Every structure is written in C-alpha cells, then in structure tokens.
Length: 273
Ligand SMILES: C[S@@+](CC[C@H](N)C(=O)[O-])C[C@H]1O[C@@H](n2cnc3c(N)ncnc32)[C@H](O)[C@@H]1O
Image: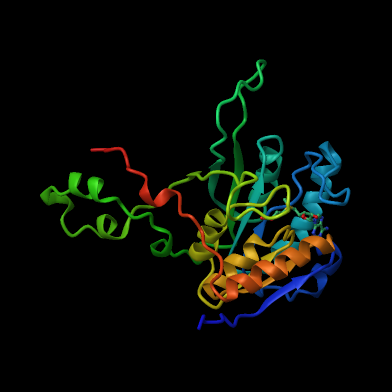
C-alpha cells in the first residue's frame, strides 16, 4: 500500500492580485513566483500580453502585495527573462536583500537559430530574502559526486570532507533540460517548469512543515514539490483548466506516483584543483 502524504495544499482558482489582501502578513516562509514574463504566451487568458512599462507596472503591483506576506526568515524566488530582470532586480533590491541571481540553462539544443544576435537559452531567477536571518539548508540540495570524481579526490587533504561525502553546492548556474513535449513530467501547460528546479528552491528555502506561496501556479509544479516534501502550500491560478491539472498532479504526488529524473546527479564535476 502507498503512503498518502497528508499536508495542507490549497489550490485556488482565483486572481492573486485580488486575493492577496486575504493572506495574513508575515505568514509565508517561501514565495516561488513564476509570473507571466510579458512575452505574449497563451495561457487561455491575456495575462502575458502586457509589455514594456505596463508589464513592469503590473509586476511591481503584485510584488508589493506579495512581499509583506513573508516572515522575517522568508525568501522569494522570481523567474524572469533578461529583458526585464535589470528593472525587476533594482525594484526588489530596494525592498529585500539579494542573495543570488540564478541562471537556468534550459539546455536548448543548437539548431541554427538567429543570425543577428546570440541565441538566448536561459531564464534569470532572482533569489531574495527578507533579512540576514533567512532560512537556508544546503544539505538536502547538495549534488552527489559520482564514484569517478570521488576517487579522483581521494587525496589526504580531502579526507573526511563533508562536501565530498554529501555532495556539492548546486552553484548558481542550473543546467536542467526544459520539458519538451515527450518529457515524462510534461502536462498541458506552455511554460511548465521542471520539478528538479522548483524542488531545489522548496527544500533549501522552506523548513519542513513550513508554508509556501505560489501566486501564479500554472500546472502546479510548486504544489507538487510541496506535496512530495511535506511543506504546506497555497497557490493561485486564473485558468480553471490548469487548476484541474494541479489537482491531478498533487493527488498523484500524495501517493508517490510522480517520478523526477534528477539530471544533475550523475554529472562528473571537472577537477578544479
Ligand atoms: C509562467 S506560468 C506558471 C507556470 C508554472 N510555474 C508551472 O510550472 O506550470 C504563469 C501562470 O500564471 C497565471 N496567471 C496570470 N495572471 C494571474 C493572476 N493574476 N493570478 C493568478 N494566476 C495568474 C497564468 O494563467 C499562467 O498559467
């Protein structure tokens, strides 16, 4: 018999900007925000059709609603693109402490592409916290060394090193394939994020049993990560069909029916000695 993970997962088919005032201030450990990027994607609504100043104005509005919900130990990750990350990071640095800019390399294969600039194959992720006392646990997100690398580092000076046994810091460039149509995780959402990425955020930046907020759920990747790892979750999505997908994915996760291929686990680190 499979174990059912009993954790509070609230899937709300509502507009985050309208509902934010109902969330108590200082109640959230982690916000994972993957908003419309302003790139004209079709989410069954016109939420991604804003651009330029109008997009920035809308983004500043929801950020100002979301930030007070964080506890003093809380963290915010925001997915964005190079087109808007400069303005967004300046805005956020006036309100929070910036810890990292993470580059998600989507491992897009080389196929000709544009000839008037370099092909863009990454998303920018801003990682911000409320205070210096932010929660961060590296151990559950360390990447294990493969046996070859471990053996290569068997010199006396490395003996007993925690990092050699437990794995290394994932660093700030995360090379994880986007979810192409045939990918085992893929559901019917145009910008679904890989679980491997979101799970890393949840495990490192939300204590077990803590509460995560996702203002723009999409297919519910953050909800699935929380269901799998015992974090409470509240998420908002305006498209009812996507909410159905989230319900199904969370039900599968609760009974352990979701498998995440860990792409990075077997990568051989280049020797840096
Ligand atoms: C980039 S997608 C999120 C993808 C998600 N991280 C995943 O892995 O599937 C953004 C989502 O926000 C939703 N959305 C747009 N405006 C919204 C709003 N005001 N409140 C709640 N959801 C909204 C869109 O319908 C879209 O599904």
